Length: 173
Image (cartoon, rainbow, N blue to C red):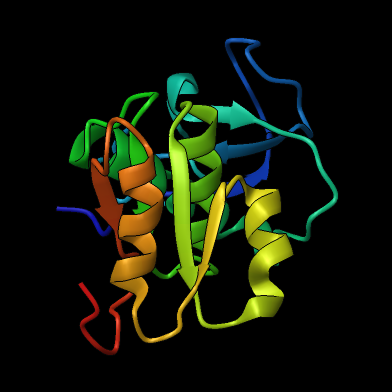
């Protein structure tokens, strides 16, 4: 038995790509595909990852931020695709909206053609949430359920899905 470096996702630069799928030095994110189980995961200095588990990207974010992106996106995408079987035309309510997973859910939900609702206690978060794809920002005022019902009942299809990326401190629904 051999020791395996833990963690599934990882980001970094390509050191070698024997199949030519990626240029040496390209920034990539690697997700799943046996990482941390069958071979060393994202905490290793170097990993050999199947090309199908690697996604190239470009951008100006620092590696400290980029390191969180693969797991965050997998959590959000998996919640929508597998957990909720979400499709366009449905409504999605997000509690825990300003977390990284909440913002990813908003963006991915909006890209799927969903109507995205999100709750917040902080009115200053409105612009951030709208930029992430939230159509209806609900400022928590103690009767969030009534606010959600008012929006949802206005829509013919009603409310289909709700996610809470972090625990709520008190029950409101």
